[in-house]
Image (cartoon, rainbow, N blue to C red; front, side, top):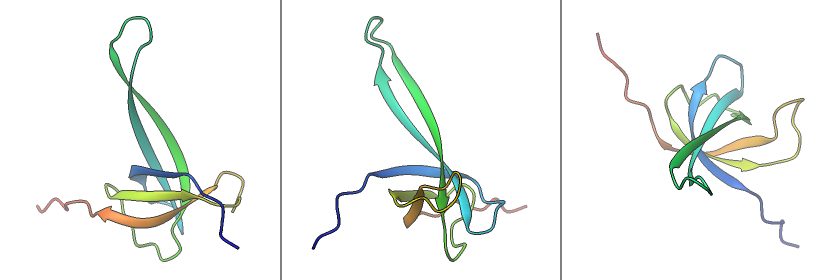
Length: 88
């Protein structure tokens, strides 16, 4: 039996302060129905990162999963692009 289709989103890690949990910000651009101006909508998702591989600024793909805690309903599937580290 095949698993049901699960939602996927691509976003940026905005917080990596918690253990095995990341906060991902997903942005979408849509046109206002009346004024036709493009607006950016943002949503934050709490995602599970088992090996603590991702860090702040990384571009990641997240997939919907069963509830893992009060807020966590997503898990990180892959890290698309690592963040560039600023050297001093």
